[in-house]
Amino acid sequence: MSAPPRRRQSGRRRKGPKAEPVDLWRPVPRLEPPQPIVVAEDPGMLLRSLGQPPLQGQGAVAEHYLVAVVERAAGVATALAASVDLLGPSDGD
Image (cartoon, rainbow, N blue to C red):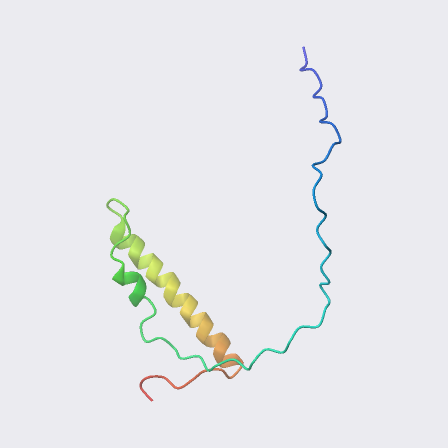
């Protein structure tokens, strides 16, 4: 025995004010040139300052992997900044 067919809800829509269409191709103002990017000495410092993640018995391992992800993201960001000549002077310079 099959289930009875589901009835379609009525085609009524909620009436309300219509949204005005947005012109996606409108001209936009020019952006200012980006500021030079300074590379962080220790990208995982902020994450480590929060303490170990609250994972029972796995906090140290989780912290290791989270810091690894942050350091990798910082490395990719540094490479992207270098590729467009946006690296600023580092603190050691």
